[in-house]
Image (cartoon, rainbow, N blue to C red; front, side, top):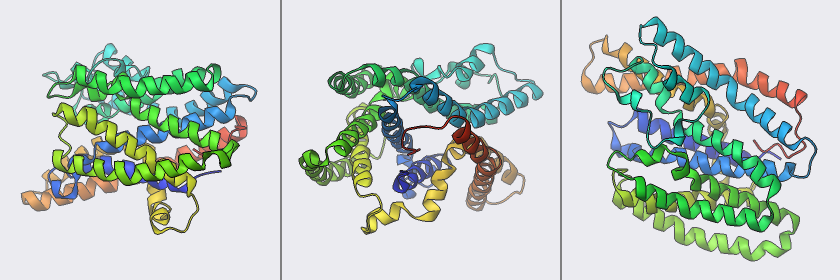
Length: 368
């Protein structure tokens, strides 16, 4: 079944990212924590994809069904965006280099530590609006690499080996972030430094899968997670409050992200167990407007940053005061971003998803 509360959680994740890119000039709204929205996406992806793979594991055409459905979900908006960026770059006389575009076409940009150096070169090889469109795609690289390698891992490993792999990812990623850290925090754009978020989500999926098979045996685990929530969530909140989400600090990118990812995993576990419940905090995640934002979160994430730039450039020509101009440019960018996101959802994404369900039906529970 579809877990509606997770749609709301996805909406929170993309709104957090928007707050970072749109409201950096107003830190009072918590915009300096907005980058954690990407980690929330990672933990959600780990949970949802691993849950699907566990349900598919014993089914026929395992790899065909999984990869075909992922491609039809992810590729259309992504490659549409890349095509538009390439056309704009060529038209403006800054076509970039084959190496730059190949990193994004084949999703391998996050295999290198940091963003592609071309995106910070002088002069820029592509227009600044295109740079802003490309710099957010590192997270798509992280997820695509994960999708590619995770299907055979789930298919061919025992439950014990699978759990050990997850534990290894959880331990290795913070250590790698510590090793590669610098004040420019390049490690945060790198697959093997961010794989622990995916691992935490995958671990929750494994727990939920086993829980559904023998719910009476997992009551103690449920109670343990509830107790952990009362300890870990306040601890994480205090840590992030005092460190202010400063990514230049190695403590934030190691221990801080560990606490954040663990907290997100606890919240997801709690929401899945209480899905459909009447508790106020659970109902809040089912709010229709929040689930609607979650519905279009993919395209909203893909295109919000360059549209922010377009809105800002348009407002500059109006000659408004600094404060008024900042507010108006944010509103213009949001209108453009949500307009494009909903337009792509109703005009393309939802149609492709319906076609996907007809042509490549999944025997797994459709929780995505």
